[in-house]
Amino acid sequence: MQIKSYFLTVSFLLLSFVSYSNVDTIIISKIDVVTPNLKTKHAVIIRELSFGLQDFMTWDELINYDIPRSEANLINLNLFNQVNIYPIKKDNEVHIEIVVVEKWYLWPIPFAEFADRNFNQWANLDFDPNRTNIGLYLFKYNLFGLNHTLKTTVSTGYTQTLGLEYRAPYIGGKKRLGFMLDIRRKSSEEIRYGLIENQEQFFRTSGLEMIRETSFLGELTYRKGLYWRHNLRLTHNNIQIHDTVLSNSLNPGFLFDFQTSQKLTTIGYNLSYDNRNNKLFPLMGIYATAGIACNYGAQDFVSLGFDLNFYRPLPANRMYSGLSYTYGDALNQDLPYVLNKAVGLKNNVRGYENYVFIGDQYAVLRAELRYLLIPSRDVDLRYMPVKSYKTMPIESYISAFYDQAQVINDGLQTDLYGFGVGINTLIYYDKVFRFEYSWNHWNRSGLKVHFKKAF
Image (tube, rainbow, N blue to C red; front, top):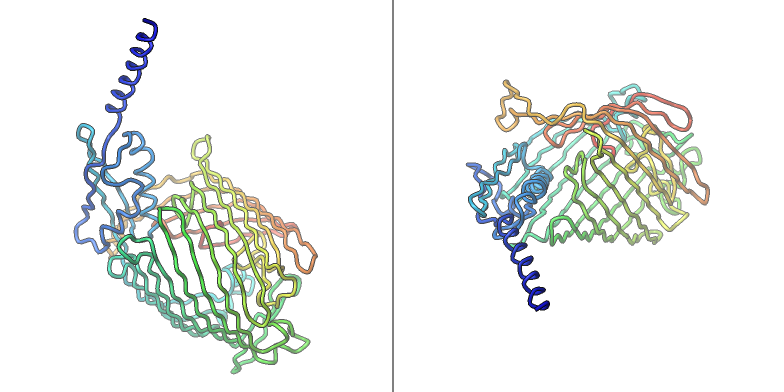
């Protein structure tokens, strides 16, 4: 009798659970992209959804996770100015409608830009107009509606540049493979030949080409799911310098073995995980990457590194945090100057925008708190002639930050730290303006301006 009661109780609980699940569970019965005259292939959009046709889930999961997550994935394609996913529920079936506003995909852009590492270095050099480039970018985004990008660059001025780039994130029916090709030639009459007190030094001879670099990059990407990527990369660089650079007054060690030319071929592998809500200005998610590269040239060496980034909202209203740790090691203590720049180029520490630190090993820690000053809103630009840009999404944040780094060069360690406050504004999901006041360990301070995210 007790056994019978036990089975009855268990059966009742199971039936109650199943009944509850049936009430709470919905099924994705239909997915439609309803934007008319859409250039982007529907399969490219559906590839980014965190759910699929005939998937079972709860209504709360769909509303609170899958729809916001899928909208973020679509924003990260950088194809759309607006993204909205609407669920239409009938009984336990849900019909998904996707509405997007596409960007303008053809951009012939004449440009005038500063040639220095960042805006603040150019400002430190008195905004010298001779340190600018004038040229033309020709972008064709979203070729064939498959998010392929063709970019050509022609410029003159401080740096003579001729470049061709093609990016194809999707090839094949399953959209798991992608590739990138980049061929570029750059030359200049001025060379950044070395450092004095961690500030770049320049040498120019009018009418003489001081440095020329020709480069080729080919990359193959495998992306099975939404967030994991495998990258296999091949690069070849050929750098030639004028023999004046090898004089003792400049830098005989600019290239390997005191030579006027250097060829370097690199084969590298990289594994990454990326579920940030916005790659260009993240507030939530994780970005982690690790890689190794084998370099072949006048001297063979191996380099490796990893990058960990965490972003999350805080319990306090409108508060967000970000934490980043970057490590790199060339496993070689005899690199030439051109390959030995650790902090100040790609790896920046705020407060040191005008400085460069060389080293074969480095680690950078960055931490930031953000307070949402202006919540995301759409601004109507009444007189904007391009229809796709008439509505401008905008949001703004106040930030407080602390950056720290260690750089090791020939066994000697340099410790850096910078901190400060700033205002960060994001428009059209992908254009960032940062105004920051920072201090460094030399107690030097000042206002800095940036046009991309800190990390």
